[in-house]
Image (cartoon, rainbow, N blue to C red):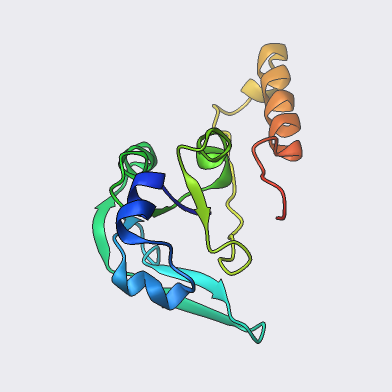
Amino acid sequence: MLSASPRYIEEFGIPKRGADLAHHRCIVFTAPGRDRWPFRTADGSMEHVEVAATFASDSLQCILQLALEGGGIARLADFLVADSIRAGTLVQLLVGQHVAERTSVFAVFAPGTQRIPKMRVFLDFLVERFQHQPWRLGGH
């Protein structure tokens, strides 16, 4: 999900399409391919817009905090930004154009520990929690 703070939007405006990001401050996660953001075009096809990072980090929390402080447009998972969007401290951008990519969630544990009752309960909780996606915003 693409989002920026109201302060950023007031100063730099709202991009109308993916290509407009060339004229905006973008905050990018430092992983291969994370500087190419996917968008649906007016004719329904897909395009990937390469954004120039004003700031890049391998910390999602750092990217979120910088976006909240008005540092630029961030592309973060729904569960990281949903509360801020609901609170109005971030504004969702390019709704209907930006294409969210599915991200896997993994639970890592020592072999054999999934049979321990406490671990089984915790793993079941994670499956239940992520299955319903309570952080999702409407329209996705």
